[in-house]
Length: 202
Image 1 (tube, rainbow, N blue to C red):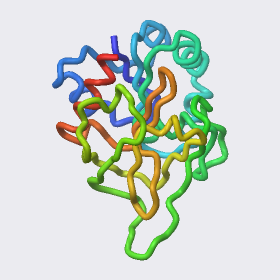
Image 2 (cartoon, rainbow, N blue to C red; image 1 turned 90 degrees about the vertical axis):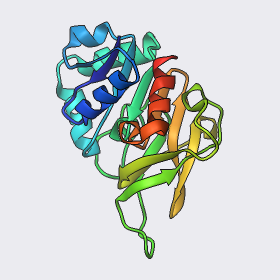
Image 3 (cartoon, rainbow, N blue to C red; image 1 turned 60 degrees about the horizontal axis):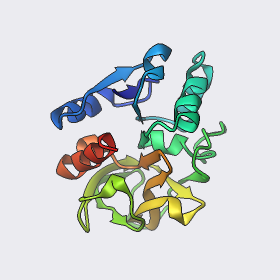
């Protein structure tokens, strides 16, 4: 069963609806026993880095269960938007340490003339590392973004795709069983549904 983690920060309904639309058996889970049974995990997220980490750190047993599933059992795990940012070691948005599952940091977009922050709307993600996550996505897939912070991974091998908005940032990442996308696949029509289908079929 694919389990979408409810930690108070996600756009859960639309993500679940998209997964069901493409034929994926998925549930929203917040109970530890439910998460322990997960065969795949999606960590969504909309909101601030510190609020997300605070919930994960203070909800009794949640972080331990996530660490066990992701780092020990090696369950395929997908972070979406803020969910991906939480995989890093920390963010310029707040003071809490991140999960540290992928070496890297979350940065705030600098100010550029003519470019608004947050980065909102459709943009292209160019693949730079082969990954099962992006198989069949095409040469210039377009996804929907809504974020003021971006991920910068330390190891280039962990960067699956790059997107340009004033600078080139990591719009999708992967390390072993851990995958992340900065965009919202549930809002990205056929391109986003392909990403979710690829993940569900891992």
